[in-house]
Image 1 (cartoon, rainbow over the protein chains, first blue to last red):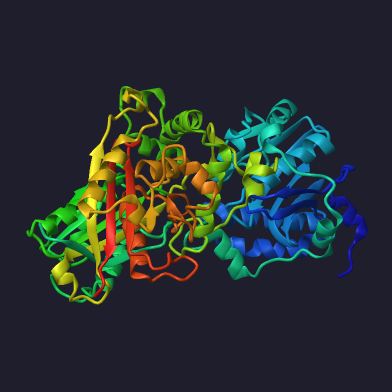
Image 2 (image 1 turned 90 degrees about the vertical axis):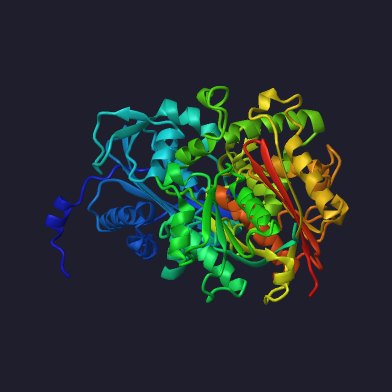
Length: 229
Length: 398
């Protein structure tokens, strides 16, 4: 399809220069090593294949989070959102979790979503922490705006950090907006942000080589199996 | 008094069961137990039904569970009653069933325990469990069961030298066994590095109630388990190897920990175990497999000492030496225990007996079966050790 580049450049939002998020490795409770790294725009189609089965899981608002995340990643892939990024977690090359967000201004970040595909290992908590680490320590922002869509999210972010309520509306709408300030982040960091750098080359190479993803049935079972682990 | 045997057991996988109501779960476990006993298609299969449950009145706004269940199962006009005794509700229901059969009043009794706790948030579940504490001396000050367990652990560490490594080993052992148990809520093995040695463990395994951390505590679960009891002389007519209730004991202690002369002394566990051993004419060394109430890792260690498997101060060392693993001196919580199988409070006391029956019938796969187990023991621990039931079961060769 021919693209009218003149119009296209009007439709594409401004992008800030965003320094890369350096990869790190986290040892999970089961002893597995999770590589946490920034995904590239060209990784989006593969990531969406893992998000897709979550669209049909009502439990813990996975369907809602997945639908929004799908749209956000697609918008990033097709240049329709400003300064978005995506950080992923991989175990043995397999995608186990996704977080995304964007820069609203140079000072203010907008946290989007956290989707843990493998559950019971605090993957969501680790990846959310990585997202906050990116905003505060690499993008150098002053604050990040955050809302929760699920009770788990509310417990993990608003209470565990704990975040501060704000009157500034979050673009996702929904309930009360909260914010992570630099002060809150650095106070919470010793108990919530972990990971080792540099990532051993063999682990990083495996993660970079290919984003593997489980089949749809496996993903659904991991998230909402009979016992809902 | 007649000898009483277990002739049927049934359990549904514990976990988060959004799709099932409490009554669904109780009915499913009951039907499995009745089928296992060979009574599934029999009219008037049982004379009485006892239901162990702690919190349906609070969590589901539903009371009189037994009346509902007996109708749901088409067991009318069997007698039916609900037994509430905190986290020992399941054990208490079993005890009532045993007494009813032993007395000669009833021949066939169904005992089922169940709880649906995941309908509410973890905070509300913790608050619900805390309703068993003293309302004026404990609850109003914010005491929770994890809080009590944390204080108990600290005292136990100071008095008996229990170390964090010992607690970690209990968690690893039980989760590794839970990973092999299809009924377990948590089917995930954990590693020492991931929950303890790595600095990343501060996120993986955060403090819950110092010195206890996340993996020291059992999960909040939904689930149900059931058994069918009858006199031993009738049990021999049924399809499965009868498992005799060789002994049982129950004892109580002060409601609050602070009133005890020594808060680390779980007197009710000791007394209940003594009664059970006396009735069974056995001693701790006669037991081949045990299910202890490890709502917190420290409790497995403390109970293993209080029932007499190890001397005080030796239980933690025994864990490190592998004595409580499958194949060890006394395998404890081969099911994964409350720690991994889960702890739907009203179900636990019954589920422990179901597991021991599986073990004594030698029905489990090799990786979970205690070889040639003949005698098993359970401890169902209510309150913070203020109401405890101990059961000893024995395999009866046909």
